[in-house]
Image (cartoon, rainbow, N blue to C red; front, side, top):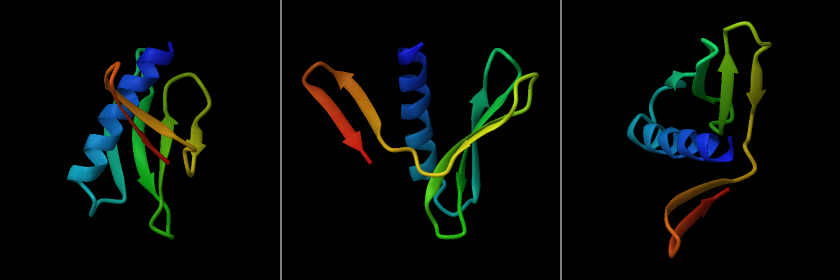
Length: 79
């Protein structure tokens, strides 16, 4: 499950960099029919939101850390 979230995190970062003007960047859908999005607060900070589906929604206004794993010797951390 951790690898699944790592891949989602990597995709989210790439999407945010390419769409910095939007307040919401849809990243994709989960198997439970929930949507994963990056959302920007009024302060301009990015957070992550999971909404829809049968589960209650979740919003993390400022994720503490995202790690981009390309290989064992090439890991980049963003906070």
